[in-house]
Amino acid sequence: MSRCLLLACLPLLLLSSLAVAQEKEPAKKELKLGIIGLDTSHSMAFAKEFNNPKVAEDLAGCKIIAAYPRGSADIESSASRIPGYTTSIKEHGVEIVESLDELVKRVDCVLLETNDGRPHLEQALVCFKAGKPTFIDKPIAASLADTVAIFRAAKKFNVPVFSSSSLRFAKGAQEIRGGAIGDVQGCDAYSPCSLEKTHPDLFWYGIHGVETLFTVMGTGCESVSRVSTADYDVATGVWSGGRIGTFRGIRAKGGTGYGGTAFGSKGIREIGKFDGYRPLAVEITKFFRGGPAPVSPEETIQIYAFMEAADESKHEGGKPVTLESVLKKAESAATARLESLGVK
Figure 1: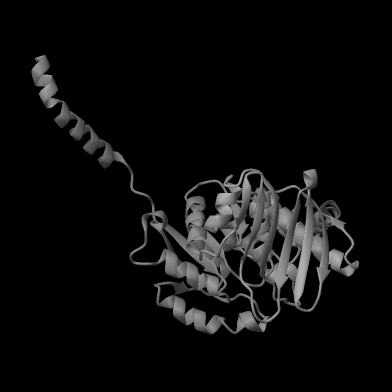
Figure 2: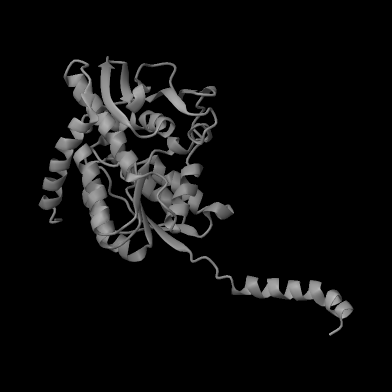
């Protein structure tokens, strides 16, 4: 073939090669997702995102096909939601199943949404034994011991898992974590902090603001001291290197919300508002597609150690409590919990 003819044919050859490559590119397998727990608005929020007929590319290929409705049995504010959400989620094409075993047989991955953290370990074990990658919504558990036990069990059964508040993936928090104000030297975060007697104080709703605090500050917290009144909580953490981060929990009527201020080596910035559930849904999709967990077990365990230490500090009149001390107790308690459930 002459040089001129070859050059003339080159664009056609390139287009042909591209077409062949596109034909050979395998289509993404549609992942069937299952929900555990219809006692929280989060279940409906995810159903609207994943099962949207006009779903965007970054959520495409994941669809919730089944839900096991039973969540909290005795927290009235949660249990009373189950009948309504069960009816509503069917409108998104989701089938209701009667057991966890039936759910895990039908799906590829699981969204553990039960609002009550107490049954999460037992629920997660069903998913782990079935080999199903699992996202566990907040709170991951109702104790630090169960939090540690969940990650131990996931490792034992070699199943990917992560937990997070949706606040972690707010644009402002992610920009600061990514270096927008240089090295973060401190942070004051806040959120609503209603209480639930079955959970340690900050686990129930304060987790949102504490997750924001750790998103910005990262790991390395060493001790916590807490001041608490009927309407407010302030938990102050001391990080390695002398950095200080605080969480303000708000129960008073009137002004509330989510946010805070971050202090960095290159400036000071407001963290910004809650951006809804879509950013978290995008991260869950990446994770279910085989990506790494967007939050490490170490960071999640430290978040719950912070909150447990804050609870202990309250009981001790505001004295500082080290995360190391509460983690030491939780490690042995986690062993006992897993053994009681037949996991060694």
